[in-house]
Length: 120
Image (cartoon, rainbow, N blue to C red):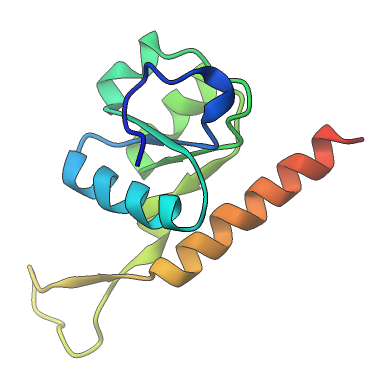
């Protein structure tokens, strides 16, 4: 996975903007395995980031969506939309589950939509 912001702009398909670097690394690995090139920055670094040409989508969490929209004019995938409570674990603090398959489908769907808009 490419996870630094020194990448040439044309090499970045997905920008991951999360403070949890462990989560960013895992998400980046999943996307890289599917042929996408990924850059990762902490949400505190969004003010210094310039929209890489070729970047088609930003992955972030709910609290950062407004700031990402203000700074970058890219479609956003909210990572939190794919995290849910396991039905068998209803107690507070119980393990939550990430729907990786649905997440990857959503990233590719948004990228496809962005390509269609760009070709018009």
